[in-house]
Length: 445
Ligand code: PLP
Image (tube, rainbow, N blue to C red; front, top):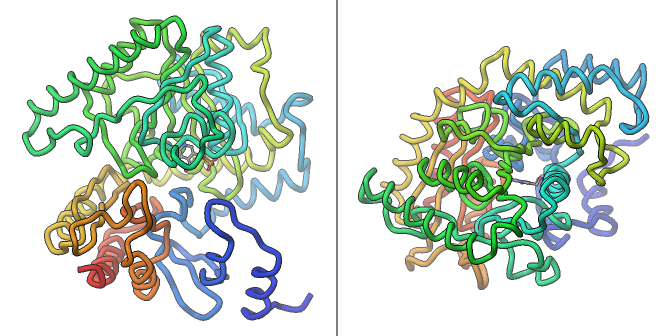
């Protein structure tokens, strides 16, 4: 086969390749990537970028694929590339389930393995509805749970775009964030007070909907693509208590934050004592080397579904090659204490984020947990770079270009700029990444 040059790739892309979340002409200008190395990506034209957001916050182990992963994947492909999950059992499936059950708090012992985060949430919603016999799912306005039927209906972000996603069976609560409630500047007491006010509003909402109609609350443990919103601990623990009080299941969406992104293995571990009934995760599970997600459920739920179908599934779920990959990725994460690395680098993330907030009028505020950070950008006119509704700010395009010019690659969605490099990053490289962002931001000031 001949090697395609950039012109040939671009021509075939424009003629034949579609996109989904963006118009496909966005692909006309994106870098053509040819190689990954550590936390860097190389383009066909010789440019080198730091992967500043782990692509879609998923390439958590970077681009030097651990040899054990390559060996396990190659072995599985060579010996038995596929087994349909309803018809047969393979060692990596049992092994991975047993390993994850060890990493999760005690009652979470049952595991199923869909292929994406969206599907994991589809399954979790189905599990909650079948188990409780109830229908409504309560989520938050600022949330992303996936792009498929139920997971999109559960999602709060982009709500105004998707009339067809429907509200039937999905109810939304306002997030208890400093952006929505003005307690952040006043310290702990005000935060706790704000959390209690938000909880009182939530309980009122549950009572007005009727607790007997609500199957589950589905929350991102830390809101991710919506902008690293970290809820007060008292709020999250209070939600768990409301679930217990009213017989509602608590589903933690850990698709983005699971597997160490925030400096703990699971995001819900930031809220002491909070144990969900169901946990969904993906991304970090395989570091995006192959598509795989997980749904962990309590022993009670696992027992329930040993004699009843969940009534959901797909051909590729529990794909043996992806399972073999995931097992070695999780082992690698543990062996190299990459969760600890995310926790240790949090002060650097905070220092660099604070520096950007202090030195750029275009940075309105920033939030950080582990290696999971976010800047809220605004134009010189004091307006958010891209309001929740309405057209993008004129500065968005030049800013995107400035980042690429500084060698920063990632998911840039003004008004947000995420800082979420692979968990394998070291301190000097992290500081270098922030220095590049610092220079790029000057086009906004
Ligand atoms: N849930 C959360 C919190 C996410 O961040 C995402 C993706 O970004 C999803 C669910 C959907 O996962 P996927 O894109 O793998 O379907």
